[in-house]
Image (cartoon, rainbow, N blue to C red; front, side, top):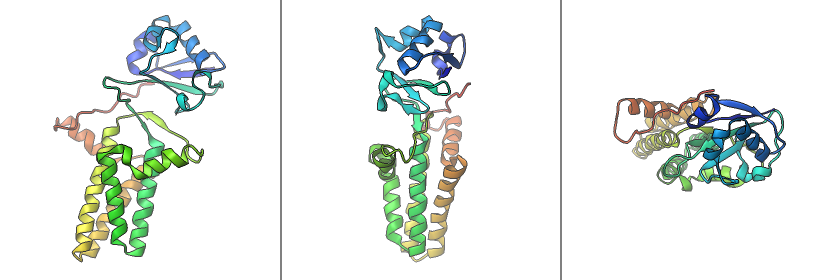
Amino acid sequence: MTTIRIPTPLRPYTGGNGAVDVSGATVGEALADLTRLHPQLRAHLYDGEALRSFVNVYLNKEDVRGLQGSDTAVNADDTLMIIPSIAGGVERVVDHSALKVNQAFIIAFLLLAFVLNSLWLVVFVAAVMLLGTAVPALSLFKGVYSRVLRPAGLVKPAVTPDNPEPHRFAQGFGGVVLLAAIAALAAGATALGWALVGVVVVLAALNLFLGFCAGCFVYYQLNKLGVPGFTHSPLQQGG
């Protein structure tokens, strides 16, 4: 049977269950079986016969809107995930594949900058990171993922309930460290400059290979301390 993951706000309508096994050959049939098993849930998912606009459904972490919508076929070992948007229309989800591609590009370009002893490559990476932090839609490396790698099937999405703000903070922090590295390199303090570049490489590698986001950790610690601007606490990840 297909498993549907239920977000925390909707669990009171499924008897507290975080996952429900359902029958059906398509996404639409699986959701219909879900609401048959838990009728109170229907009003929160559907507006008439159509899914509500703020209800997002992912099949194995891929948005079904990019597939065949409700007609998308499902198998017994598939997992559907319901992710409602919050107030203001901002989804509390992050595609971690986009983050990993971004980190891989950062590491690759900074290592190339070190090998070539190229200050301008460091400037380029810093500009990409800071621009992507300020205006996420203009993030160059994530754009390569969303426009080239993902459509070609070279990298699969990995959409997970998460706050995007800590990841933006982490990237912005890395960009600021690179600004310090650029200043040091331009001033002739090459050892300090490349050491700072190395810090960014190590932090990106920790995230890429071990899944540990140091900047996110700092963000959440500042949130616990009530520092203004750090408004998001970690999402609950119940099973």
